[in-house]
Image (cartoon, rainbow over all chains, first blue to last red; front, side, top):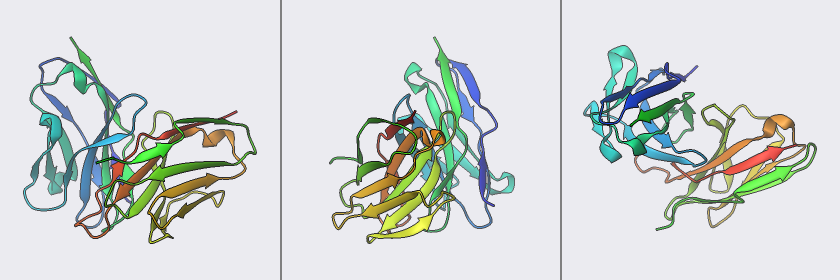
Length: 113
Length: 114
């Protein structure tokens, strides 16, 4: 069965430091991959997505992610974290061409001043 | 351009009652999906509606049902509420066939079952 694993439940970084959030997926075909961010009490905002082509994708708010098929990974990165980036981050894989999303359990990001 | 809207924002019900949640999709979107997000978990897919029909369904009991209207808006109904139904219910809309139905989420409805 398809699944998404986010190994880190909670990460704390200092403001200005770099960030990498890990995501591993299990999916038989070419995956459609997404990163969403959720602020407390809010819905999900799409950060970026990968469908095909260039394995390094750029998103909003200075985030990027790299698709590595050999490692079944789609890690999210940001070179310099801002205090406003504190939130919960979800990685998801899309089933089929119009299918539902399968989410990981999320990684909560805290930012130290 | 209004995004996905959901109502109500919060809802408190008691066990055994029934609830209806509502969703209006983003302009230009024709597909609506519903997700349940329990506390501390990632969202779980409930079902998806397209052309007023349920197109896909996740692993949820028949107590969860839905409807899509001709204007693409949608309702989620839950009957015989259980304590375990307490969660944030998220609606997502997308446009079928473009090129992949990237889903955009609403703010959610927080349901508390006492």
